[in-house]
Length: 239
Image (cartoon, rainbow, N blue to C red; front, side):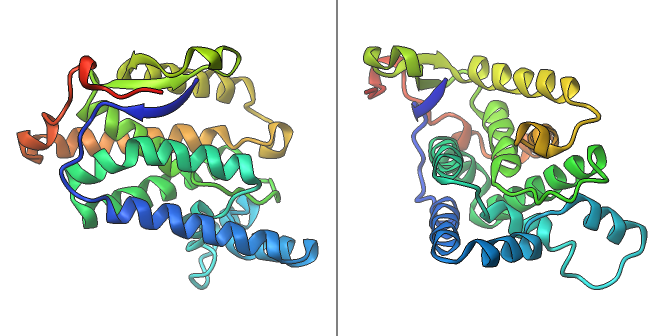
């Protein structure tokens, strides 16, 4: 299920969300412009390498290694990887930014990214395979959206039923289904490395739990008007 639109009207321009999308895209353009050897070095310098980050945790030295928990969120392994992540961020991120405010949203995103990386490392301490992508941070955004707008309508496209256009589903159905799939996959892969499936599922789980925890704590302090800008189903424009 691919989300393509939602029914929540943002009141403010999502400067941070768009900046993240632009930055991630520019970084990926740089990735495809360099040689394979240079790209490997780039990933080992700026992606999360679980074994190296775990070694740093046991014996901290310098700041370059822990900073990869943030820089890795701007790296991607392919056009589909980038496009899928940025689509999710485009659909859900602007509304979370609207509710939190620009600065707090930026902090929220980076914290979710850091917890996502830490969770993946905890389940994969010996791996030397670089872990890249914004999925963990975006999982936190999904959790935030779930807390804020559980009854909002999300338009999804099902690949093999694409001719039906965007189908409306409640946000809580889509997001909870997504999270349960991550849990199922994560427990099924315990003991394997990220390279075994190519997906750092525990980063998704960690980012989601971080976003859920932060947003549940913050929700009482978010003005109610930020939580009520939801169109009715009849006002949703789906394609």
